[in-house]
Image (cartoon, rainbow over all chains, first blue to last red; front, top):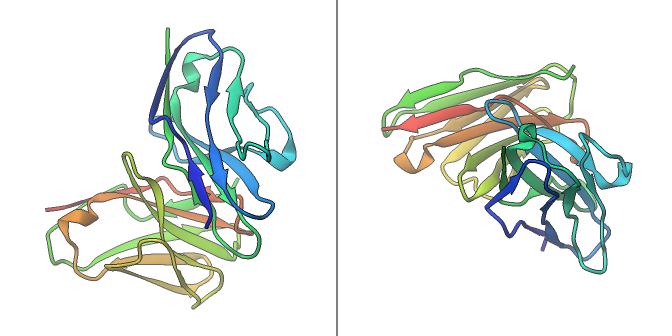
Length: 109
Length: 111
């Protein structure tokens, strides 16, 4: 079964501190992993996907198949990073995304 | 810019009422999705559709039905609203199953 686990419901960090939002997955095949973000009063949107291997708004995420993880990282948190973050997995075939329960990031000035 | 619109931002309904939530996308996407978003539970898939008149159950279809008569429109129907269906409902669309474009959400309160 496909499963995505985000162990932290809430993560609070100070501005300028490093951020790591954890995501672990369970899937027997080769997954595609994504991070979606929802800022206050905005719609949910794609932040990044692992196959792109890109940095968006200073965030990066590396797929670690050995640890079945896809943690989201940023070296220096900004207040505007405060949002709800969801990790998501896409398995093979025509199956919808499986989302984690989300982590609310709060960056304190 | 992809546009996914939902018919209402806020709705208040009474227990037992039939409720229609409408979603329209303008990017000719094959796939459309309905989720509910609840604190601590994340996004849960209710139904999805990969073609006109086609539908598939998601993780929590009970108490809901859907309709897709046209490619751009995907409706969620609560046949008889109950208080435990009070939630934020998100519609999404995508050309594949991976990257999804979300609507602004409809916050439904069932009294």
